[in-house]
Image (cartoon, rainbow, N blue to C red):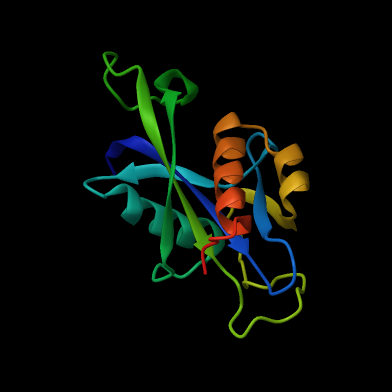
Length: 161
């Protein structure tokens, strides 16, 4: 399928009553780095459609799960892609960021797989982490910036409910 000129980043999180938010990090098969769900748009998808599709493909998160758009947006050099599908005149593509709330309903105590995540072949495993641990494990600056934005939103007095 033709690759659209943008990337998406999706941060799955759970936020149980009387606890700090937890974030799901995924370890990639190809480079062994920890990151959030990431991928590119296909054909004429919008960033939101690509985010829903990638969340389903990489973690079996239902495509009907509501996305929370984040303001964080980064520019990724097209040279970072091994099989760069874009014309040489395109040097950077935007990365759109989203969060997705996987808090069980009704909320219960955390267990090893509170959101029933099922990994695709792109990842060796995933883990739920608190903010600081997640921040320390992430390799890409764009992931750290988006996580900080989301964590601020979730822990502020006017937090997302």
